[in-house]
Image (cartoon, rainbow over all chains, first blue to last red; front, side, top):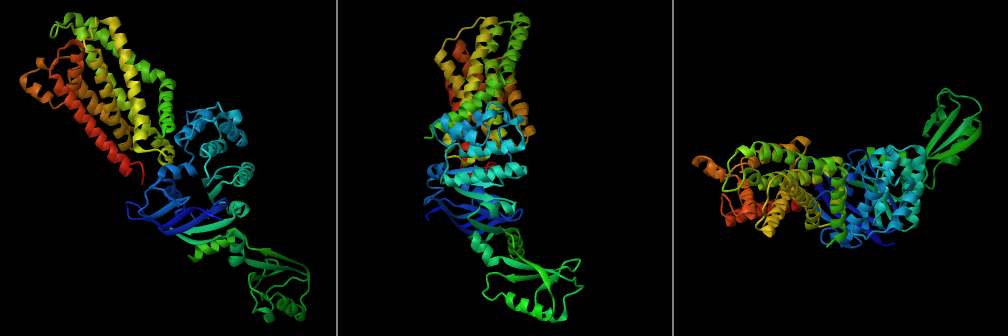
Length: 307
Length: 253
């Protein structure tokens, strides 16, 4: 898969001396959904802003479709669409006008059919003549997405697209993002809802304190850093882990009816057979067994804490 | 040239004018009309002619300039400040649009509004006082040059301002006094010699004087000096705006 975005040795030091980005290197492949995760202040928005031309990087290079964003700003910016984190809209403008304004701004000839189709997909068509100030927060967010899509970008940045949006709308937006991917749009997504990234992303990048800690295929990341938990529903409750089993990474729930074993799922020898044999020898019986893979959220927290 | 972008910004700004027509057009026209009624007809009839021109007619160029200066600054500064305030400036900064195109959009729209306003005031004035425009092309040239120059100046103020107070402070505390003291309502030859010399440091004196010459062929300062001064001010504004857009001063971090 070819690369649509390449960030090389990117640094950003703000006027006050704060270094928001530290030697960022990142390649984004055409057609993928890439989720950029990180705690508040990690540098996600600064990175996106630098790529989109809103922030001046201190050093480094950014290529979009192999074109430098400074040397060929017209071409590269035409390829990019941005939905920023803040709800920034032209409050007094009608929806139709503001979306058409965005298309013009990006150098595209008017195209009523295209704008109509976007507004219909984002269920904004009925509101096209409404002033933006009369719309709900979720609808305003959709207007911002419509603006970003108005000039048919190939690379779309969604910076916290579902912040402040209710569950139903979030699910709706997930579907729309998937549709965009099917249309061939490359999507870079930042979110605080890790389940969102888990649901949609092909690859995950984690950024903390201005540094990219990891970029990995989502499945590989979950295999590599994920741990699994085996839980046994015991026939008899226990007060404590029996002495002969203390060498295992075991824990009991509050009422002692469930015993859990956490293990590294990527290892060939995870010790499950041995543990079950020892439980049998110790005369511990159970009525049910179930396993649970660690979520992306747990992996994310583990990675951020370790960095 | 990103023609569509220039057009989008221009139309967007003009749409704002029509949306707020009472504030953008009606209000300055009404207030200038009041000047004509009070100074032109009521008080003006008791004031003797200046340079052979009736007082009501004499103040017309100055009053047009007063509106052009304040409205050019106000329109252009608000045009660029409002997207900064609401955060929608991100779209301008991330669009494939050059500095010149940004200026053509914002300053072009602000200057167009001012020129329309100037012509409306001129039309209104002709209803109240006898008017004669001996050099209409030169008059229009002065009008356009002043509107563009002060729209550029307004753009600079809009970028510099980080609050609504700052947006108002330069027009209110500097431009309006300079315009009133720039010979809108009097000829600077009527001032004591010392204050005539002080007035020469006021750039607005050159604008009003040159503009008035295009009407009546009478001016306080030579036409060529007026033209040179406004071109100097225009050049300073262009250099400043170019620096702002190149460095991203108060636009990009």
